[in-house]
Image (cartoon, rainbow, N blue to C red; front, side, top):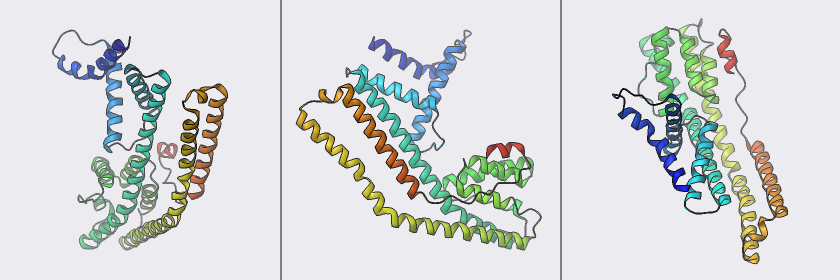
Length: 304
């Protein structure tokens, strides 16, 4: 049975490659099997992107469920008992979620640090070339952050196709995936049409200064809270140490697998998670003031 399950998993993973090999054959792959193979391959690509650090989109429920099932089945095939396999599958999914959060934090930090420099370079180009904002803002090619470079490229393509600055900024906003600094900057830039060149330059300086001051304030707040975050780790270390001490006294894990013990463990974990979530909310840096983009497009209004 375990061998059959392992063969089925391997077949689903390599099916897309086999499909490309057999494109010249007359008999195509069945649609249902092809869809299942392609979906599994996309889920594997998404998980690999999280591990490699190239994918910052929120993982889909299907990808997380597929990873948990694959990890659990793989451990079960090696001969371990079922609840250890389930625990391993849950741990693998939790690691992917933590990796996604890490990538999101790095992306937000890089965008917050890169946007002020980019706006100042845009203002300098407006002064040097005497051209308007729409023809300068998406012209730069040397961007330090790969995340900001991706946003600028998307905005440039939209502006080249439509010639509309507002549509290009909306494209940047959508690609920003609800990142606070990007939302604020796109909202502020959408208010520039109709202003003179000197007014736009002053607005670019004001936006850049606002973002820089907020970055400095955030860094100062994080440095003051670093000790609190370090102390909070003991909330996890102490229960883990007590659990290990209990295992050493009991001699085995069997006394902890009763219904009462499992209920107590689940209640303790829920209480720990609640306290952790509450403390995270208390230490969370205040969000940017809500500033919606012009609601000339109903689709954009639904996006917010």
